[in-house]
Length: 130
Length: 111
Image (cartoon, rainbow over all chains, first blue to last red; front, side):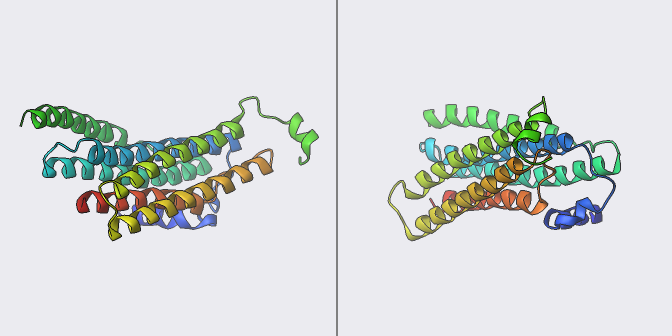
């Protein structure tokens, strides 16, 4: 938890990351930046999915529709926050010459997306009958 | 190491700065799709005061994101070996995304 708070401080301090270790090959930094952007796009896609559920499934009951939309929006927020946290951790590991951090987040996210997808299939099928 | 001639000479065969620039562009495109969906969400079915405020906030986030991407793209083009971005740019981009999601949650609950 303390580690996480320290990471959050690094999000806003430009010199924070650069204070440690040596500057890695710029190509590695750019690759790390692209990975961050890819995660950010994933987050934006989840947020867009939340909007789409709300807009394009109007026949659903209010509870299901809002629940699914909020689940997708929350997943988007988590994904965005995780994107920058992972970026800072990777940048610091590269500067220190350590192994890159491992993460359970991709597995977790794929499980959440799978559950939401199954829920949407069920809800759309049932919702149209009832 | 500056100037067009030396930039040509040390050009990275992996085209890393170009790929990073395009990654920023793709991300702004995703942001645009989300902003359009947010606008549709806010203004479909009659515009309420809350809807218009949320829509304006989403537009502000989108514009902020475009500005950030523009500045980063210019920074990438300015040197032949651009380093890591300022963490504050990255945080601001994430905050724009989070703000879009929060506006979305408000619109979904309200609608």
